[in-house]
Length: 97
Image (cartoon, rainbow, N blue to C red; front, side, top):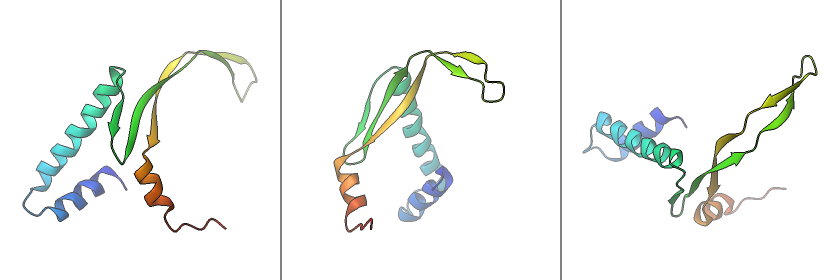
């Protein structure tokens, strides 16, 4: 599902809201999550999951074409861990055999 599909489904489920208002709400939520992660905060949505930032240290990589060693800078990467309720709903009745 992409963001426009999410906005459309929420708008269909809430006919009293205009689609542009739903889009503004979804964008505001996502912008706040990004802003919190940029500050180094953790964002937890109970029953859904938690977003956090993990630091990757600098390392030496390799250019796959030439085989030359390349210095790769350290960076911050987003990390998402699912909540217990989501895991239970996803795995309810799942047979992996």
